[in-house]
Image (cartoon, rainbow, N blue to C red; front, side):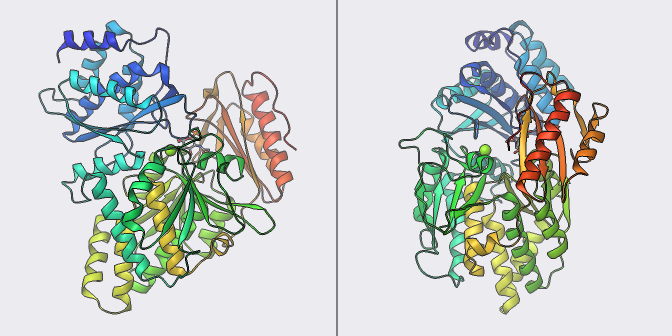
Length: 542
Ligand SMILES: CC(=O)N[C@H]1[C@@H](OP(=O)(O)O)O[C@H](CO)[C@@H](O)[C@@H]1O
Ligand SMILES: [Mg+2]
């Protein structure tokens, strides 16, 4: 480590005094103007992680669904996964170190993690379309270079595309070619093969409207369109040509406001979907003839996918272990439908895709989705090999189903939840099953629910257990929630400190919207009173 060079370059990317940031569920995220030093330091950290794992590490510059003025950064581990928890702590230490302490922290991390500093390092970098992203990604590169790391800058990519590149590079290209063309080719080939077998006909059915949140998803879908146009026409809205990123549009807006995005013409019963700003989340929706908006969220996506996979396995005659992974935010109706109607085992993990991803790896086939639309399906290597072999060997119906499953496996981005990949999977399944968006929506009816936020002095006073469904502290809070829940039918409620915002999140569901609203409000009051609420008392929303 050339300490003099590091000090010199670090002075160019000086840390504003007093600024403390934490590597949270989605890396670092705040106003773009506060992030230059963070980017430089994450370049340094990526080099250390690369040396330690002897693998390529990814650095993604994005703030996903946050407003355009924000930005953020996260590191991608060797198999395309989120950064390991012990390194999240190192990231926080490094980010908050004052200039004179920077070396010591770098040396501490290297020592604790037994990093062989003589090893080569390779880092791949990508960014979203925010105005601040290009300059910030240069600061990452500066950090990589000062520690002697090699790098490749992919420029503009969606977050899941960078995860995919990292995964490809660390599996010697077995997973795919680590280029954007390789990604387009792999997914499109699988999609076109699948839709060739579809009974769906007519242009109406073969087209979907996509709200791209004015983000990177629009650019990449435009580039990719010609690769899969035999199977699907995509009509892009909020493509960034006029509107502002994530402003009244995108998956997060549509899910949290439960209404269509602005900037999109919607005719009744048309199939529409929304990506978020970095295209790692997707939700579907439509408006019925009466003008009512219908949201099809991550839970219903997981249901469609897992039921299709289960059917294919039945046709192939393989008894594989398939599981669906959700979080506490999954709608109670979805969990009930999966367990009782489809007989698929459902598991609940803490919020944050890394938790779902790890749990999904325990199964032959693990399907995971957060209700907000972030998810994918993972297939064990043994399953992939077996299914593809059956697809080649068998000429009968079983073989046909195995070929289909083989293509579905290739169509999923198994490194991370991916709006483009998920959209193509969903479109293929709807086409193959001849399902309309209304029929898909009718699988089950969501229980009315409400999410609220409460401001407290220190959200760490709330600790939880049972995959965040029960509050352990502060004393009395869980008892208060239990008493409130008892007063409503089909009800459930929980509270947890957010990992990305300085708030406590409250979730409630019940048999009617009024009851869900009321329960959420009453639980918010309990949080405000027992967990040190600040500012205005929660207001009722009914
Ligand atoms: C209720 C909710 O949607 N929470 C989101 C949000 O986490 P919080 O820890 O709840 O702030 O951001 C995460 C990162 O994007 C995402 O994984 C998660 O689902
Ligand atoms: Mg995102």
